[in-house]
Length: 175
Image (cartoon, rainbow, N blue to C red):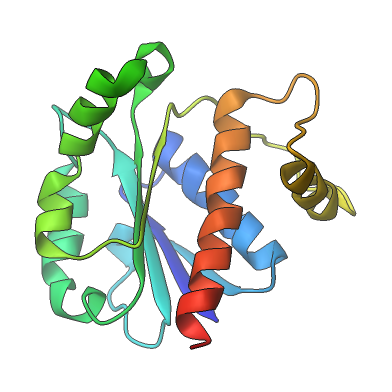
């Protein structure tokens, strides 16, 4: 399974989330290419695409929307997952907030079918390289419903989403 993980902008919270998602997908056995959207000239040759950006004025940034428009036809023929970094997400709770947040990506969903969507607060992603056995421990914690003491909510949500996305992609691509 060859996956493109791409993000708007060269750095920042969306790049951090994209890097974490890419590491997890690669650790689970996928062949992953991580690129900023400005460097992702094609989506051909990838069996799936994961794209994301930081929310701006209640939607995706122009660079990210242009990426979706430019590759719309190809993205509609393969599994496509998206993530959005929303700095205020940590303070937003409840069904009403969830409805507002879902509107942030309605333009994307109007152009391309998404198989999964992740919404993250963009808290600082872990800078350390994964230690040997870290992914196995995480998968075990996920299966048992346990998370390590002191683990950031954003980081654990990113990991959980990436693991669930990997499982969904395996099912879709091995039919």
